[in-house]
Length: 190
Image (tube, rainbow, N blue to C red):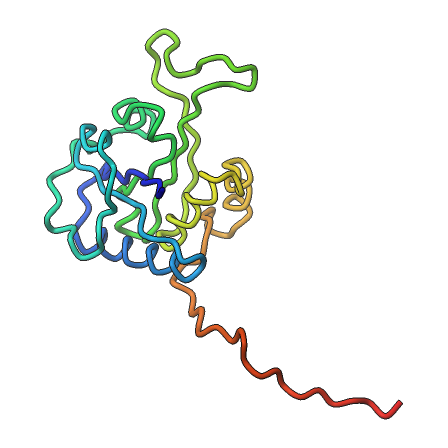
């Protein structure tokens, strides 16, 4: 069963920006692993309760206005609820400028198993990292299945020149050469 990840807009984002982001990340994820689209753009917290289909690229003009405008990642997390929305994507003002998005993880328990979400009515604890739009879906999938950790991802982003994880454009993966004829090797006379 496919996990769907919420995508929320915390700024007024033009539909072409959303469509470009979805098209790029879905294509890259499919090229890497054959993954089906798994990002669903939400307009309100209520949309998070029934994540059964991905938002297709090219349909952003049909989205309702976002009720997440000007919310922080922790506020968005509180509005989305738990536990189904542990990871989500924030498309913000910076996304319009540089085609990056914010990946967010809600941290429900500390290392000792103490509940971090419901203490004293505080906002949830969140961890975030800025990634290129291209890398959003495959990175979320890697986080969700545990093949990549948020701290590791943050470290890689911090080590990059722009402080962002992932390729800045859709790589040219090309056709697979698997199963083709191997080139001839020259044998040495020694």
